[in-house]
Image 1 (cartoon, rainbow, N blue to C red):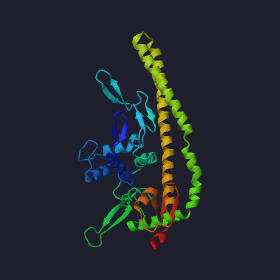
Image 2: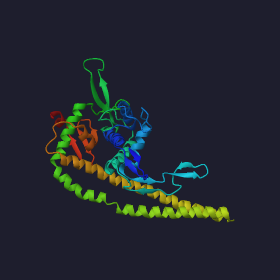
Image 3: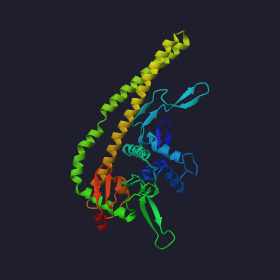
Image 4: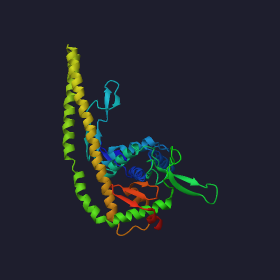
Amino acid sequence: GYEKGEDGSLRVDPEQAETVKLIYQFFLQGLSPYAIGKKLTGLGIKSPAGKDTWHQSSVKSILTNEKYKGDALLQKQYTADFLTKKRKKNQGEIPQYYVEGSHEAIIPPETWELVQEEMERRKSMDARYSSASIFSSKIKCSECGNWYGSKVWHSQDKYRRVIFQCNRKFKNSQKCRTPHLTEQDIRRAFLAAFNEVLGNREEIMEAYREVMEALMDTADLDAEQERLQNEGEVVMGLIRKVISDNAQKAMDQAEYERKYNGYCGRYEAARLRLAEIGELRLGRIAKRTKISLFLKELASREGLVAEFDEELWYATVDHVAVYEDKRMVFTFRDHTQVEVPADRWKAA
């Protein structure tokens, strides 16, 4: 997505940037890195190494690299041996520096943060994430908590049809009583749920105004992050000094071990807290982004939605729980919940 300018700074490569945007779009549409790799290979797009085949590791690297939102994390690697020039991944051995807005972004920061949050969500799933369908890993069985998956009935005759049912319906000790659904059932229920939310649009947007302001305020975390980074640099300097002193002059080894272990403990505590702060900041930003995208979709709709829209589904739905009586409870990305009884989506 980038090339180096004459002054060494990063400049956007327009053609490659389109591929990067496509990767982020596919991911937010529900595709896994593996599925994205297959899709890019099928489209005949060259990989970063100039190969015909994309690997999921390359896709995942692009989805997690902060440079695409215009930021830079300095000293990801360091020279471990100055004689051999051997480079090593920095795992806390030396300080790292995060620079915001260091170059032109390809992906909006809020979109990048949403992708990171979605990655964490998929990791936390009990079952393996699937992107076989737009409804994969979105429809949940209320009885056992497992995801619905697609099944083909009568695959060899004229009655062939695709249905969705709990993936563990017949694998648990007691068969789940939740019903199977067709794609049309899910589409109708979604339209009923989203249009109900549209009816309360003004109230929802007003209620989230203060929430958004609170989520935008990360001053407390930023101040603590800066303090810990400074402390880390100071402690790392002390570690280097005590090591140097021990190498150059005779020291009581018990005293050396005490100082060295004490400094290392302080550095590790600061490093762990920095990681926690990073997670907290990411959580706030991701929540803000999800709410913002959800509200943007609400604001863009003039009247009721008459036809199912895949992009609207991806942008607004977190998951759907299905119950034995065929009602569906939609949890939207802003955590709004709407219950749609069977008679409503069947009537639709």
